[in-house]
Length: 144
Length: 251
Image (cartoon, rainbow over all chains, first blue to last red; front, side):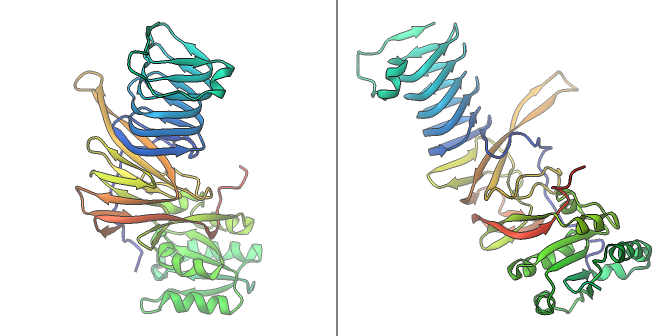
């Protein structure tokens, strides 16, 4: 009865076994909308609209577009972020990073070429103070 | 005979070409002392009655002998009975056996004898259980997970995986109490004509419950079976299946 029956089965393109399942990956060509929260690591190469929080490490690729407030444990940003960014440990901005919003991190590293437009708080005070909403006329544009 | 074991044979194994491979399987079972009660799946025999009878008779391990369709046909009747489930693949298709690292034929008896049991999660789509994956091919779909939603910007395929992909032989962790949404999106072409290749990007998001809304195509494929519909409720039942696999064996 079941000997030679081959079920019809749609195919997707060949897939990599890729990141372990604890890592969330938002790849290019995918949009995430809403309030996203994860306890693990997150990699964003696509679009995020809303809010993003993660207990682990956030990696933002050069092609990524994040229009959201971000609150993570650690971050490496190489793409566009429009929103406030709060990092409880280390924040690294790559040369292609474009940040519009306030930044707060215990430890901050900025590569030449990164563009920041907002208030920056780093060091031990960052853990005591969360980024405040931007007020008109109080921004400082930094092109490092 | 070991009364705690039972073997369900699919009817297609009555064909003469399976005579010698089956004899090899049965010889191995006897050698390991795990040969037990045998039953054949008949076209008119209700799998529910068949499996309940076995458990009432004191069986705690049921081994399915056949192919992936045989396994999927009886699996969901065995799961609520709390028995350990084994599988000896004898013929194509055996993609599920490959995902569970169970070799074909008599070599699978070693896996049964080693008895490495995994408590596997089961995916549920609108109340229907699935073991491997749900696929929405080449269509726009929107996956809503709690407070956020995911969708491809352009066309792309989407799969909701439990133990892994039937077509691609990619295994996932089916013991983590989660399903994983895999969205493939088209990237740019690289290289020059005529050798230019299009890259595909893969989004991976683990979750426990979600709603899937299909926009373009009006069906989903669940364990390779077509299910028409537009909106589906997805959730995971953690550790629902006790399955003897080859995945934990040291090589």
